[in-house]
Amino acid sequence: MESASENGGTLPIKKSDPVLVRARTETAGDGGFYFLSNLDQNITVIVQTVYCFKPDRKTSRDNVAGVIKQALAEVLDRFFPLAGNLTVSSDGKLIVECTNRGVPFVEAVADCEMDVVGDITVPDPAMLGELVHTLPGAKNLLETPLLAAQVTRFSCGGFVLGMTINHCMADGISAMEFVNSWAETARGIPLSIPPFLDRTILRSRQNPNIDYAHEEFSEINDDTSAVAGIFQEEQMVFRSFQFDPEKTSSLKETAMADGDDNGQIIIKSCTSFAALTAFVWRARTKALEMKPNQRTKLLFAVDVRSKLSPPLPRGYFGNGIVLTCCVCAAGELTEKPLSFAVGKVQNAMGKVTNDFTRSAIDYFEVTRARPSLAATLLVSSWRRLPFDDSADFGWGKPIKWGCVNLPEKEVALLLSDGKDKMTTTLLLGLPITAMKRFQELMHF
Image (cartoon, rainbow, N blue to C red; front, side, top):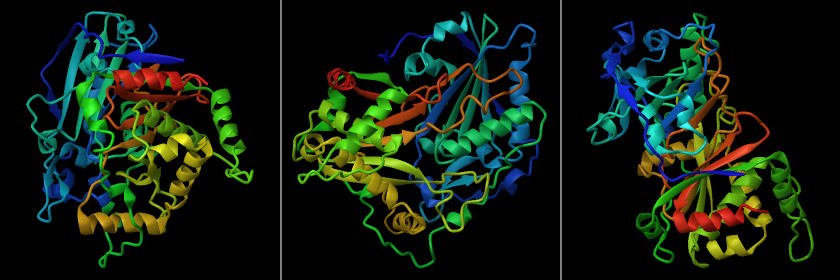
């Protein structure tokens, strides 16, 4: 099963001018600077999500925007860095200036029913982009707010909360904990997970120690296949693909059934993430028709909260993820059985330890290098993020949620199906001809 988007229509919508919502405590952050760890420095993309609510007729919806805006002001007392602005420190790294400049908040009214929004499981920048606030005229990330919000009311009584956040401020887990805290504040209940804001616990070591090669930062020469040129020349289209438990089990069984030249089983156990990620990496490489000798890289994020020694405190607010990778020739990846790719994914996952993470932090400190995305697929798994359980602002849980756009053309997202948590949805974008080939590979 799949859904498609080729940058659809726009909504009949009227927006207010944005107002700046500030933390109620004017001394929040004391006007100082807020440290961002080296794990934050690597991920500075803008992430935009939307949450759709359909309150029952018994619930008053007259002051939806007012309640959510007031709750934002209150919760910013606890998450005050989000009300600041991004700047560059004296040593050339990103840092937050705690100015309490405020979070842009927009109220909007759509002259249509919420059903017009349609299937939001597929990124659609033209349609869904109307439901989030983007600062016009911002020339770079330093001019872009760290957080922005928009509430759009529809004629049917439904409403949408659109959130824009800089990934350097929060990974998926932290973003969900922030949204949950915001929603709990709106409902007038104590925060279930108060934020832990001190990111200096992830400082680099005084004497940096790089113990790993960190191929995730290495540049791949794309001259062989000219993949970048394909993305520039053709229209980008987005698709979503569903992997139900039966389909996922089939991939896992295939990987574990593969044998080596001597008939020995290569993969003895396999997680759903490893099977899906390996399968998508192979299929995308085939769809882009990479040359056999073209090097290709798979990047994916691993949550290190429990892997660090000591573990990160509960409620750690920031990026508690590190990127790991697999690299091989495209021909080797596509011609060898699925177990080859799964084995590479498992090896990459297995090497993420406390030592690996500390080495990655030190690597950035020394080199200031950022992961290269040439001839690369970056898979981000949101499968365990509680999108539909963390956003009850008093009008019930969202009936659906989605991602406005993929942050980079090399990114693919894995999400749990909102209705069936056992089903995984894949979101990705490809040039139109490559997408046609990718779709064919999804039928197995």
